[in-house]
Image 1: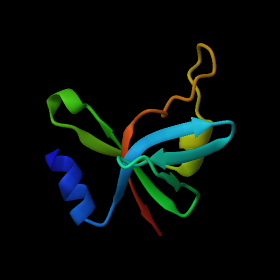
Image 2: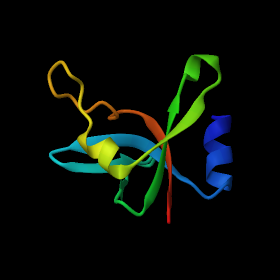
Image 3: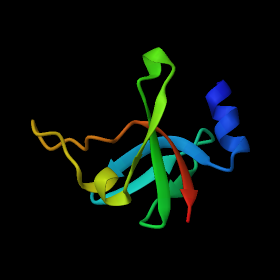
Image 4: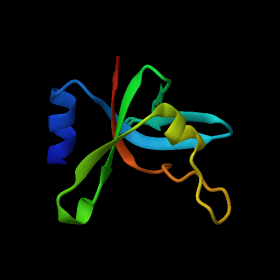
Amino acid sequence: MYKDLMDRLDGYTIGTTIVDDGDAYLIKQDGSRFDLDTDCQIELLTNTVIGGEYVEITFEELRDVVASDGGIPLYAGFYARVKRS
């Protein structure tokens, strides 16, 4: 994936967001875990059908925001790029 390569070259750690039991982290393509915290700049890829754009969210938003219909973590399962501050 082109975006994947460009994100890595720009110094980002990339992966899929996981939210589990009050914890939030990335699963990288090699299957390893990258723990997230408040020192991370987290950007989620959205609108992938039309090329995609990144939206920045906080660690707290990733960890705490849930869907109104059942409490499922709203930002789990997104492609994300992350840098530590």
